[in-house]
Length: 279
Image (cartoon, rainbow, N blue to C red):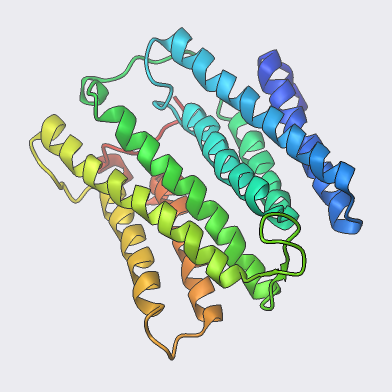
């Protein structure tokens, strides 16, 4: 890992360090809440986000195309979207547990990205050279970022079913219900998940004259969408407890991760037009 980190750009190293410091600060807050630590953790989280933004923009300029083609590029963008949603939640509610879990997830993605760095910048194939490429990918990754945070909130609901006290906008003494919190973030993520799915179908018609080709990744994207549809449906069934609803969201996040990274393990992977490679 250290050798891989050594050969990355200075900005990558500093961004990674900023997120590591963010995690350390959140761990300190979890032991003893302190106003200075809260402000400092948000500052370093914001610095990491801004540096990640720089990495994306710099790559875009160097490649002369949107930096979403390779697995490495998409991992950096995933870090960016998770950071965006997590920071928004942090500024709104000051729920340090969300920041703590998000920073752990981000660091794991950073480490994974270290071993998936591109050897060279690859040009886009003809099928990706369309204006739909940008909104399709951005929609999906905004959904992934939001639903990842929703999954963290659902996990916190299982651990803390009675919620926690807010330390910011809601006012002191007001409790955050993680089940309702999960619902609000999932609504946002599902909106972009739906947009990404529809834009992908439109793109398929433009690129391959087929709105839906039953490609393995298309199928799993649809399965993921159906899981979150089920979540909203089950919320209207009184016999479904909040705990069971949280498990549905977590299952949806697992499906997202598999859709994103697990296609290579399917026997039909070689037939897919959407499977990421190490290139």
